[in-house]
Amino acid sequence: MGALGKDVLLHGIHKPTTGGISLDEVAALRDSIKIGDTLNYPRMVRDRNAAGALAERWRRVHVTGIYPHLVTVKGNGPEYPLQTITYTEMLTDHRIMSRK
Image (tube, rainbow, N blue to C red; front, side, top):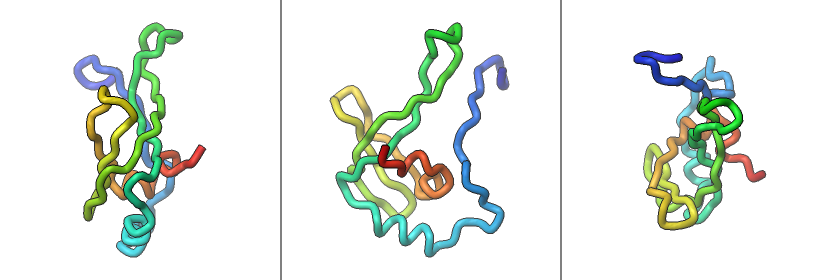
């Protein structure tokens, strides 16, 4: 249980960042992403098998905009709002860029 009785699920940084992330890495990633590319976006859902515990699920999304510090993405269908992913998140969590 987290603060104020809310569930907390830890996810995110998988790549050690002891040396930090260089500007060249961010620039190379920004240059490699094109509008229309497919990425994975994490979302939190209630798991029916674990008595309502939070579970992480991944959804395929398409890049709709490229900005200096982040990209905007949108899932298929009108029910998915525009969302953002930062380049730091992409560089530290390899699952976002995974093409599975």
